Image 1 (cartoon, one colour):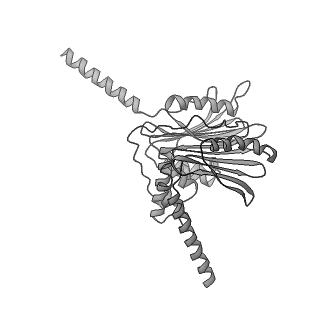
Image 2: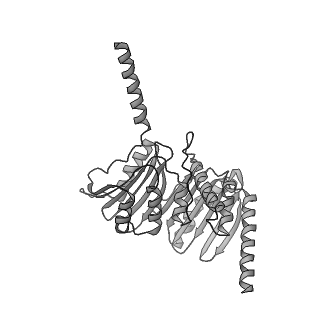
Image 3: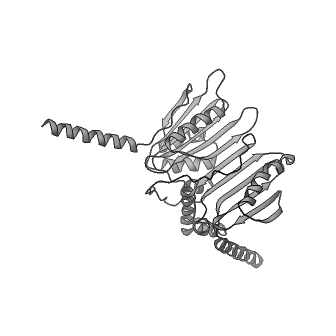
Length: 339
C-alpha cells in the first residue's frame, strides 16, 4: 500500500513539474518600480481604456489581435524611481537579461533619441511555453504588455500595416526554432541606432505565410498581392534579416556604411546598383540563393537605413513580382485612359 502511495505521489510530482515547465514565464517587474496600473485585458476593457492608453491605430490593431488569442494579455504601468533614476538603457539591460535566460528573442528595438532616450522593445518566444512581451519607457514611466502562450508573429505584421484580417494559423512549431544569427556581422553603432529589427527563419516563414494567406483571400490589393503571394518562394533561402536605421548627418554616413559594404564584398555579394531614388542615395549588393545574401543601404539627409539578408532571395520569384506589378500598372493606366 505504501509503495502504491509513494508511486502515485511520484507520478503527481512529475506531472506537476512537467506542467510547470510548460507554463509561460511571465516577465518580472523592473526592480524598484512603482506599479500604477495593472489589468488582465478583456475586450470591454480594451474598448473602454484603449483610447486613453493607445494613441496609435497600428498599435491598437496589434492589441486587438493579441487580445483575440487564447492566452491572457496583461497590461501594467509603472513609475521608475531611484537615485539616480533608472534610464531606458537600464530597463533594456534588465529585460534583455531576462530574455536570454528564458529563450526569448528581441525582434524590435525602437529608440527616441534626445536629452532623455525613450525606447520601445518587442520580445517573442514561439510555442505554447512562450509569449509576446513589449515594453515602452519614456519620461520616467514604463508601459509593460504581456501575452502568454503561442503567439504567431506573422499576423502582427499584417495588422500593423492594416491589411484586412484572415483567421491566423495558430499551430505552434513542432520542434525547436533556433536563432541562426551569424557571428561575423559588422559592429552595430549603438550610439547612432534608431531602429533595429531582426527576424530569423521561423519569423520569416510566419510573416510570408500570413501575407500569402491574406492575398489568396483577396485581402491585399494589386500589385502588393503579387509580392505577398510570391513571398514564401522568394524568401525561402533567407535565414536571417536585419533592418537597421541610424541617425547620422551626411558627413558621417560614408564611415557608417563602409564596414557593411566591405562585409558584403568579403562575402562575394557584388554591387549590382548604386545611385539615387527620390530623396535617397542607395547601394545594392546581391547574390541570390542559399549561399548568397543581400545588402541595401539607403541614405537620406540625416538618416541611414541598412537592410541585410543572410541567404539571398530567389530571382525567379522577384521577376514574377515585377511582371505582375507591371501588368497591374498597365491595366490601371488603360483604365484611366478609358475614363
